[in-house]
Structure formats: C-alpha cells, structure tokens
Length: 308
Image (cartoon, rainbow, N blue to C red):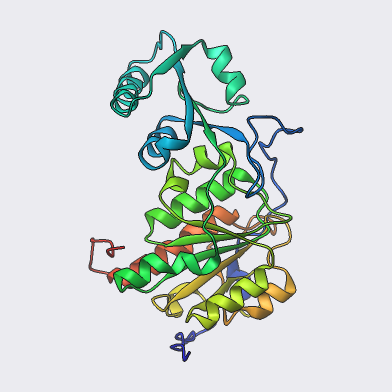
C-alpha cells in the first residue's frame, strides 16, 4: 500500500536545545511476588484488583460481567469522596452488584496500598486486543487518520497508565506494548489511566518490530521519539496528521536500535533549558507529542477535538 509521505522539517533544531523522554528506570509499584490480586499474562485465568473511583466507574461501564466483588470504604470521612462513592454504589446497584463495606486497612490490603479513593473491585484478567491490527478498526470505521502509540520496553505501570490516559484524551486510537521485558496492564496502570484502559484498545505482541511492520503495511508511518543527537526534528516541523504510530522508548535506554531503524521519521521535544543531561519523562514526552498531533489535526484556531 502506498503511504503518504510525512512532511520533513524545514530547519533542524539545535541539538543543544532538544531532549526527550529517556530517564533512569523508575521505581515500580508492582508487588515483589505474585498473588491472586496480581494481573496475569494474557490468556491465563486469574483475578486482580481495580481501584480508584474513575477506574472502577469505567470498569463497571465496560466489563460489569467480569466484576466479582465491589468493596467500598465504611464511614468515609471526606465529603467529596463520600458523594462520589455514593454515586458509584448507585451505579453498581443498578447493574445488580451490591457494594460490600470494608475498613480502610482492608482496602489498603486489597489494593496493595494503592491510592484506592475508598473503592476496590475484584475482576477477571484484563482483555487485550486480539492483534495490533485491531487497533485500526475503530479509526478505519470512522474514516479518520489512525494514531497508535507504540511502547518499546516501558516498565513503570504509572508511566503506562499515564500514556494510555494521554492517548485517549488526545484522540489516539490504541496502544501497542511488547509481551516481554515491559509492564502490562496492572492495577496501578488502570488507576493511573483514570479508567482509560477500559476505553482504549491495548494490544500485546511477541515481536514489536514485526508488529510495527504489519502496521506499516496497513498504511501507518512510524514516528520515533529520539534523544538529542539522533537527527530528530521538532514535532511542529513534521506532519503528524498522517496515519501514524508514535514510538516511545523505555525509561532508561530509550528505543532499541532495531526498533528505531524500523521507524520512518524521528522527532525530538525541544526544551528551553536542560537539567544536567536529564530529559523529559516518557509519559510527559508522549503527552507533548500527542498534543502536537491533536493541534495539527484540529488547526491552531480550533478548540474542538477531532471526532473519534
């Protein structure tokens, strides 16, 4: 399939003014040992916790049939929290699910000390998309330019959740992650995404480069977010309105050489000041690039997001 050529940069940015997402690995919230509340690999039966008001609300909307139990805080003290919990419990009751009251210590244990906001649900394993090409079904049906975020070895569940959230909010259509040497969708990921994991398709793949090649054959251009000195262009000098896979690397190493080589175009995030060689966190860099793609699609004078 012939793919439209993305617009090249008119003026390369100074390498002293650019930086991207590479950072030392961050501390993961994953438990040290597996348990019944730990998400399992795709296809393996098990249960895990989903916590946080927004995350559980979206879970009930999208996967009520997989919710085994709903636990809420007994005698919640915060008025805002109480109001939100009351609405959530009404939603659950309307769906035939009774909330079970627990004290804060029990909810802390069920959420493995996550920020649960007074609610924890027990559910079946997360449902990934069947294949990377499934991420294109919704934009193709809607007749819009696909935008898929591709993550090469992101290991922090908070970063993954933040990227899923940004992808959904900025009009993206899916997230692709490798099955090995990367974090999957965990309770911490779901909480950090504010429930966007229930709204946005996420696909696992055994071979990331092969999956990228399949998406290229389907018409997507691969745009790599790279570190300074790797011939990246400023994102506003590139055409990010084309069917695109935005490829982001791991927190410590960035993109692997073969993944970077598979990409068609490289972008950097210009910065006014550096921090002794430090660069933007991968989820922040991803949000910046996703926003620029949204800006280009909507136009500088528009305040209306593109329709998904």
